Image 1 (spheres, rainbow over the protein chains, first blue to last red):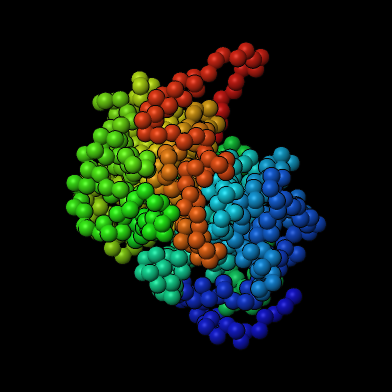
Image 2 (cartoon, one colour):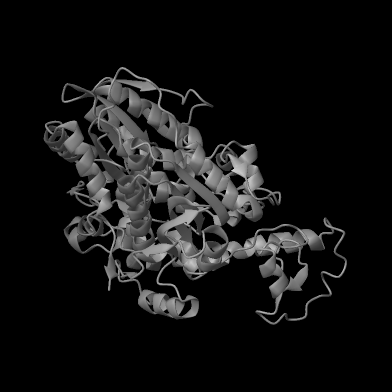
Length: 285
Length: 306
């Protein structure tokens, strides 16, 4: 495994400052060139992994990978958004921006998991669903909507982890789950900080400023009741030690699975529904 | 703010005209006189001008091109439900500021004053040609009907009321998407409403969505696309990503009918396009067709659990 040279991370503060990081510092950490992706974590978390392809309707999407493998010896279905680390890898996986067929593949594999009584583990790492003509033609809105619907009623435990960027509906499509864990530096937002700045101030370069007022960190998600756990990364960020970060993810998954696999499925589905049902702040005066 | 997203709708149609693509409107460019609001209506699609009264008597459909213009929830109610049949639900529900977004409270209170609405959707129970149903109408005049906590909660409650009362649900959708000012909380409303839609579906209750101008973003990517039947009004904007964003990605101009109701129909994401004159009776007929018949079956149907 590669330990990444820290020179590129000039803007990332040293580890002892981690607690006082600004959200924009975290944005720099998750954009670090050496940040591990699902492809790095896969061999550290799962054994006997077989990747499955295609949505059986239109095609295959490399921005979402899925398959079956073992976690702690238990067969599981894994669905993950795939980021690349260089331009070639990113071209391959479309910068982790899925097309509708990616979400439809995800639903297909999730249904198989339900049929064969395997839990589903989802990894979120995307700036958002792809914005393009073909995506619209093939109904990216419908594909996301259907994912939310299907995962909400999926009769098997679903655990999700945000690895880096959790951007908008494209992230949420893998985020309807019984338990959501967020890596310490990961972010989860309704729109990318860049998009936020360009809409609000007509100036995309005010991204860091946007990032700091949007409340999108792991801590924010826990306090808003959106995530249940913060998964610690290696000191200074996951890029500094993949193995330690993977171990922490593994611990979270192991705990969450044993907790959720005990629960009667109808009870679990009710809890899943209510987890989202109660999010929102309003008054009725 | 979000409104700016949709300026492009106006400009693309106007610029299409100035490109000379539509020749039956020769005075368009010279006609730059300011039109006083409330007296005349200038169609954002074909740029033709008519008196507001005439537009209103035509159910706010442009008399020259048939564009189904954006109307308020109250106007929509007046042309959709039987007279005096509407009982509103949750009319006092109002937004808080979940992520302490600067200036959000002020924006909401200004809009309340300006629109006379508490939020971007009204929900309730009504009859349409005598058919009882639950109805929800989104109003793009309130912060482009973006979905925050209140919209999410009211829509979810409408789903739950429909399931509880065994009444069909009709939602008129219009939205700029999730409400940025409520951060990730607004994103979660997509999951919440879709979950409620799933429960209604499992209960075997019909759910009809009517896509009106504009239905986009997080609303398209949640309950709007989950109707058993999806109806669209003619020529309205329906899509997921913003047009400018896509144009920025592909570096070319998109055709004018991209992300229209007709585009959705052609690509298989809407069942039908229905105009305002036929809407009431179409909805009533569809509700009647969902009464079903008794089909003999050995199995006694079990209670559906969510």
